[in-house]
Amino acid sequence: MGDSGFQFLDILLLGAIAVFIALRLRSVLGQRTGHEQQRRAPAPGGESAADTGDNVIALPRRDAEAEAAEAADPKIARIRAADSNFTADEFLKGAAWAYEEIVGAFAAGEKQALKGMLSREVFADFEKVIDDRARQGHTQETTFVGLKDAEIVETALNGRTAEVTVRFESELISATRDRTGAIIAGDPQAVERVTDIWTFARDTRSRDPNWTLIATASPN
Image (cartoon, rainbow, N blue to C red; front, side, top):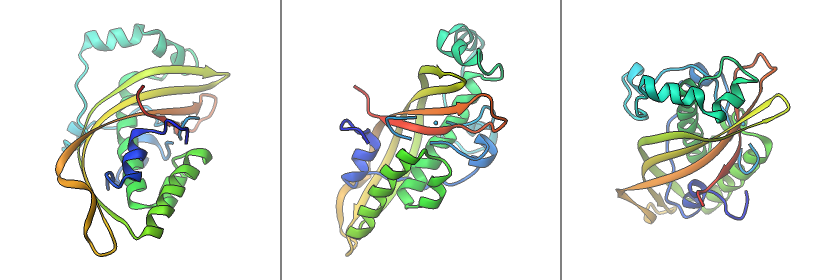
């Protein structure tokens, strides 16, 4: 992880973040997602929170005018040039589910689940934090209040490999306890606003619709 790191992991290192959501990634993304300061992401398609009755990650609805603007956006056109099926709205739905799935698996220390979603470099970073936490005997209690927004901020094409960077704005309640159960960080009553910038990538020549998280960063 770069020196700047990213806010989510920084908060975890301080013992103030973790979320336990582990559902439906396969149906929404295909099967994978994930990395940090290097980059991978979710497949188009999937269900919004409204579709499932789960309001945890309901993103702002985009009207026809917003969708038309996205279609004309050179960032989106760049990816569509390599993948004609790409749409910003469906990608963001998948990215939202991926975000919660990865955050949840990371917080829970589920390394096996993370392995299928992250690039090697990002997995190594996550694994180190998980192992350090376990050695210290720390546990985390986190409630995911909601994903307030997800926005595509940058795209790139490296040959036929598409990269999409997304800014996530989420709200979490988190506390860390030591071996005795005493709270050593965070506040189980306080909602904290978190900003993460994640980059996903996918080989557009592949039949596999899945994207992998390849980079994470904190806002400037």
